[in-house]
Image (cartoon, rainbow, N blue to C red; front, side, top):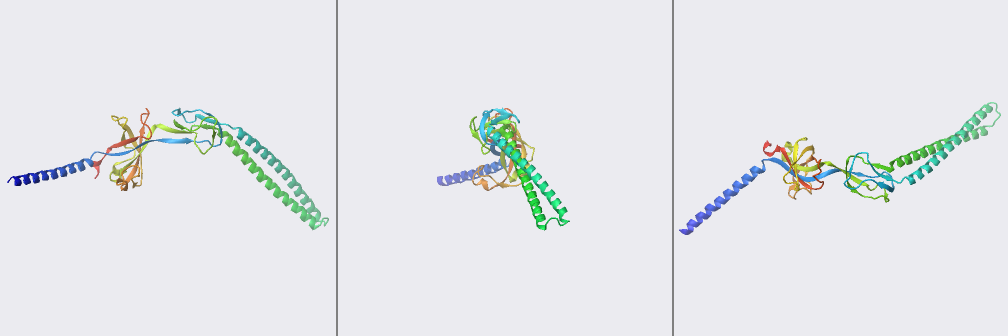
Length: 299
């Protein structure tokens, strides 16, 4: 009798547990499909590498990491002595080429006059056909030499213009407002267009790439509000907005989710968040909530 009671109690408890699990699962699914759409990502800044357009020894570098710069601020000056010497040599070549054109033009003019004179005499048979042909050949050669001299002058002038433009690039200016986040050289070092002198980032407004499942992308619109949370400010929500929504779906990027979730189709959403006080820093993870995009609104 006692065994029957025990079995009955066990069966009842098992049934209650199964029912409880079903209720919990249904509740979880219910709440999972309710509330605002959420996503995670990393704060990023728009960065600009400031590279010189010419090579040379760095005379001055006027900024340090953390400095705030404005567009047009003078950042660095490169020694222009080598370029000045190159310009002098190029200008000397240009003047020599100009002299060569002048000489070739004079020779061609004389050759033209010689041909005209002999052609006038040949009408009276006072000059042989061979002499006239030779004079015409000299005229043609003089014309070819004049054209070659003109081409050389054009090339020399272009070289002068190139070096002159390079001389104007020894001063490097900030291309945009921002904060210097890296400084890669010191005064006295040799720089080239290969490596940036400094990197400037706009920290007053940061960006976040998040990935929203295709299920909810119909709720996401450009210009909608976003709320950004970071671990360093657990009780604060930073307001942001959606800047753009990718027009094409993609698989979840490898660095965002687990291996199982990477097979899901998602849309990249770019969120911008103002950062006037500089509390947010590039590179830190964050959670993004879209308060106007509620999952229960999906039809």
